[in-house]
Length: 186
Image 1 (tube, rainbow, N blue to C red):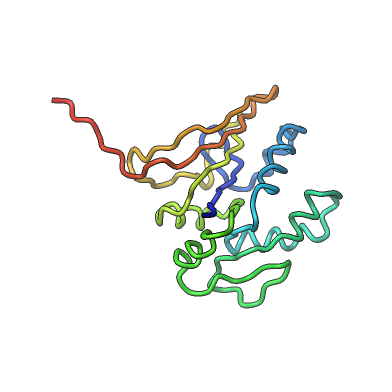
Image 2: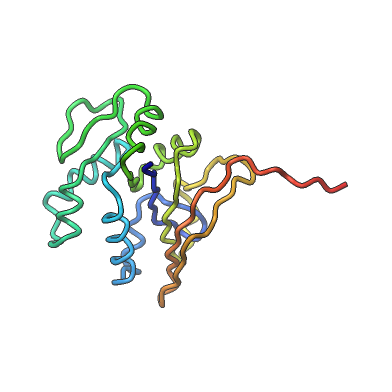
């Protein structure tokens, strides 16, 4: 059985929108973490906006090497109702996204970058198996949050964590239970 891994750059106050604010913190530690993410899956699962941004930049990206080659070469699945023609080794998910993702993950590990609306949809359909979060020591104050609306007390298990010298946290959380029994207080 494959899995769905959500990978996000997150500000300390929970925002994921437009990660340009992450650039001053970039280190080899983050690069290695991101390489491990990409090499640990079979395909990318992207929302329309993220797909369009990536497809416009990665084929001609100035970075050279294994990461660029892997990013450009691996299969991509795009959840979109508006795009009919896709490039960059991408396939459009037709029909019911939840059913399609469930079928894909029977034998494929999928990695979701960005794609806030898609992540919310996947979470609501209990299709996220793991969150790989790079948490930055910045407060943005506004933007799109990773966890806008969630089931109360859904639980995650910390599987891995590392604190880098610049204060960035590399974390991996596995989804353990979406229906925690709340204790009663007499």
